[in-house]
Length: 381
Image 1 (spheres, rainbow, N blue to C red):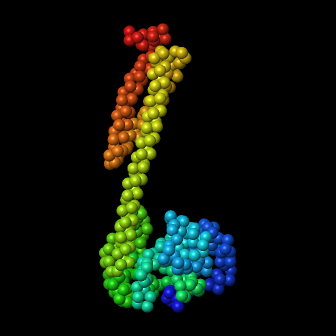
Image 2: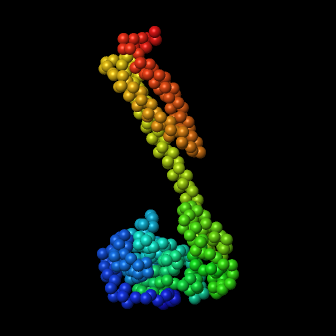
Image 3: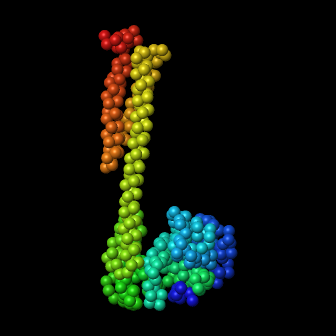
């Protein structure tokens, strides 16, 4: 018996045409890149409805459900890595199905989102979360479940049975089987409560009107950290009705902490990088200034230096030092070690600045003095 219950998708005009004329599914064994697949899909048609059908049908006919990954998930370093593994192995669980669907949508210019939540089968809440998709065409959102559309399990063995029951699932039907953690992705004007879903409640026909379109627009436009915070707030407001919701809230909160920690690391690394640039320019200015001092100690002879060469030496020193000064003035960090380094570098720059400014005055006077009298500038007479 299939673990995936029968759904209620929308009929798709022109299905016979797609199945008969599509070259995407026939060439599936040669496709190992999401970009290549997306390009091939768009060569078939630029119509968003047709593109979505091609994406959904290609995944459903080419990606097998791998129940072994439920107990032993295939490790991946990023979503891109996960998608690459799915295309390479032609196997996935819901994470891989939904990630590939989402990536293909984006590559084809269709706004989409991976929806996470949980499901119920015959009144029993599943013990593991589920992922499916939402995609927008002509300012209207639709729901898709490419995992369930691919087939089901019989005695823990995947049996492919491609179905359009989970293509453009009406929100009022999807909510009977799928509960998003974030209520916005129910796509309902009056979202069902978690408690009602657990107890088998019906989709409410009355209640406060909820403009999910506006909420989703604001959410998609938010920064990564704001998205985590917004979703965490929405989920908490709806109540922690079961262990899956509790775990998901922990995941969101932990992700937000990690994001902020990474931001702090990035800021620290940026300060270190800019500080290193300032140190590099400072060291160059020290070297250039030392060359100038060495030449001055020889009264700019042996070798003889022209006025322009002398001016260039002090100007180069001044320019490099100025670059360091500007960078150091912009550096700020709460890290004690970095603060000490910045303070020390700033002090060294200040000391060199005093010496350079003094020599700039000397060089100006030197160049304005007749050659026969310049020797007196070195003797102090």
